[in-house]
Amino acid sequence: MTAYLECTYSITPFPKAWAEQMAALLQAGSVAQLVDLGSGSGGPVALVLDALAQQGLRVRAVLTDLYPPGNPRPGGFGSEIQYWPKPVDAANVPVELEGIRTMFASFHHFRPRLARKILSDAFARRRPICVFEATSRTPAAVLSAALIPVLVLVLTPRIRPLSWTQVIFTYLIPILPLLMFWDGFVSQLRTYSVQELAQLTKDLQADDYSWEIGEIKLPRLPAGVPYLIGCGPLPSSAPR
Image (cartoon, one colour):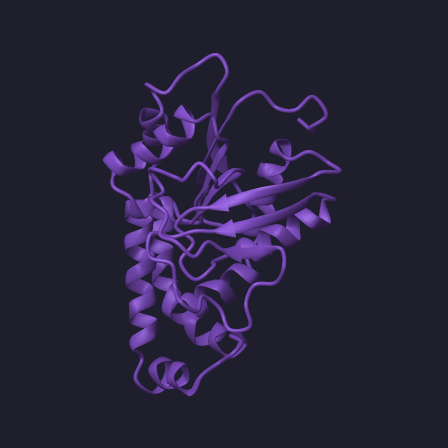
């Protein structure tokens, strides 16, 4: 399932759109670090870094998870992406992990109480945080989940490496298309709206920290997807 999701990100405009939203936090000419929370097997981080590099922004990333995988990706991630070997609680990030905190298509996994703790931890420590989703709790987006089984059938041959197990449980015994449909359907239903994100940050206010909350609208998508960026004052040389 995670291999399919990574393949899907590679053909969507999300990584580029997320990178464009993040650009104002990054300083041209310097090397920034992302601290990705709830990374799982890696997700779209490498694609986001590629999109940032196309904008002339040098970025490296540290992937973290409460349950870090022993072997997150065959062949590793390369020098620009490393996996933090110890468990990391997204609501209590270790002080040694400095950088811009990111959550790509994972924030909806957290219930409101824990979601607010994640934002509160970034706010209390004055760390920038970027929350991006690829789903939306709107009628059009929820209905579009019905197309997921078809997409699984079409995109599976593009997955690398592709195992026989994946082929068998996609085409001969179609368990994976059904699981991917359920995962996508539930993700749409659990995604926080712009109004709900604003409510989560309502009591997290300070003169030296601000929140930007909105929707990313992209062509040919049934609905916009929410995002949240929290940060202190931008560097004077950063693009705005």
